[in-house]
Amino acid sequence: MQKEVAETLKAFKKASRKNWERDLSYQPQRLSPLDYIVFKILHQQFGEDSPSLFPIAIGIARKTINQAKRILSHGSL
Amino acid sequence: MNNLFSGQPLTVHQFHFRASAGEAVTQQMLFLKEAFADIGIGGKIFAVERKNLTQGKVEKWSLDSAWDCDLLLVHHSQGNPSLSSIQSLEVPQAVVYHSLPPETFYAHDLELKSNIVLGRRQLSIFRKTAIQAFGVSALTVMELEQAGFKNPRLLPLLNLDASVAEESLSDGNEPKNLLFVGKLAPHKHQALLIQTFYHLKPSLPDHSKLFLVGTGDPLYTKYLRLLIRQLGLSQSVILTGKVTETDLKSYYSLADAFIGLSAHEGFCIPLVEAMKFGVPVFYRPLSGAKDTMAGAGIELLSENPIEIAAVIKTFLSAQPALKAVLKQQKKRLHTLSLVQNKLVAQKEILNLCSHLRPGRTVTTKSIHPHAIQPTV
Image 1 (cartoon, each protein chain N blue to C red):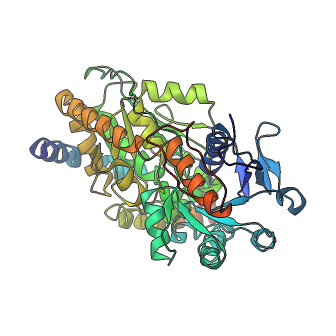
Image 2 (tube, rainbow over the protein chains, first blue to last red):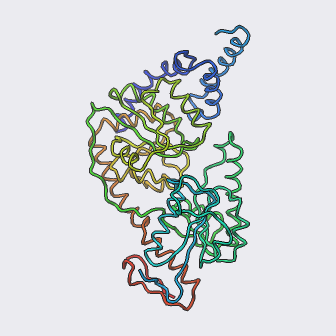
Image 3 (cartoon, one colour):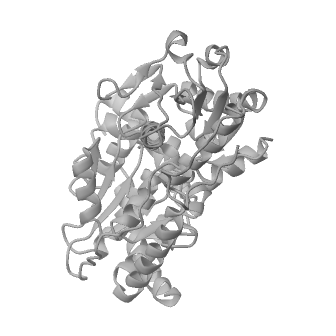
């Protein structure tokens, strides 16, 4: 089964990486800005199970905080 | 049934600080009460905090009502604020230790974190006061040994019969139902499971679902709900909340795979339930889950959701491999049923009680011949 798992993994990695980055960024149709900020904070607390994904999450969290600052100062994203 | 001891009937009370319907410690207390009653040992169950329980199953703890026993089984997990009051009761006490999760998972909940730390500290108190220490799994027995308890014994969690529901592996084109049953808690890693499902979903047939059965930590539950929405999985990842026993059976019956990614388990009864329902079990071989499965099922050696997803996908597409896994699980269930059963519980308690009533006769005629041969 190891060979089959390796082949599946290769295909998954190719397909998943881009989608994951996209799906973890702010998407207004999924969460409100406030919910997204809460999500990012909680994701930092609970979401670091996967070491390979956590650095991405930190980067996005920084972006989110900047976005939140913009919302607070200009009233829009 | 007649009492097995001559003279006064034996009474064994049980205590746990919290009791609620469906919770593992409470389930064990109810199971033990029934197992003891079968051999003529009476007793009540007491708790300080009681939730969602049928009237009369668990009584409110008070010193006045619990003194009339030969033995008090004190179930111990998280910190017990009533411990000093219990220990002031002048009756023989034995501790039944249920595992504690690592407190590092609870930085967000200081009350729970300190309760876990307190639970660990209090365990050493029992070393001086308890006449016997019991663990409920191989892991907890080992933890008791490491904590310096002499000759800790296993007291079963459940009466396991080794029968398995008929397997019905769905074919590759049918929607898949993935399942985990357990408290929503950081150390159970449901977030990792949702991430795994996110990577798995595009390769599964349409309408495939992940069911997370259980309630739990409010903040972690909030995070899981947001994670599900953020990843666009609202239609396919279902947090069921609390379910009835009938519904729980339906979830197991419909499951194509049980996936447990917990970093810590004491024993994990849902692993056993999944095996009984003929569901292939994927799990991380850590702590109690490793002992419970003992090599059966499919071990997940990675924490990376993409890698876990690849293993699950490959096995779900390989029916012969799944059949081999189910065969192995059947064997494991049989072995487990030899230690996790009513007769072992009866044997342990009779052996202990025989020391409490020296000089009394113990008869074993109504006990299964394989169960016990206590001598007094």
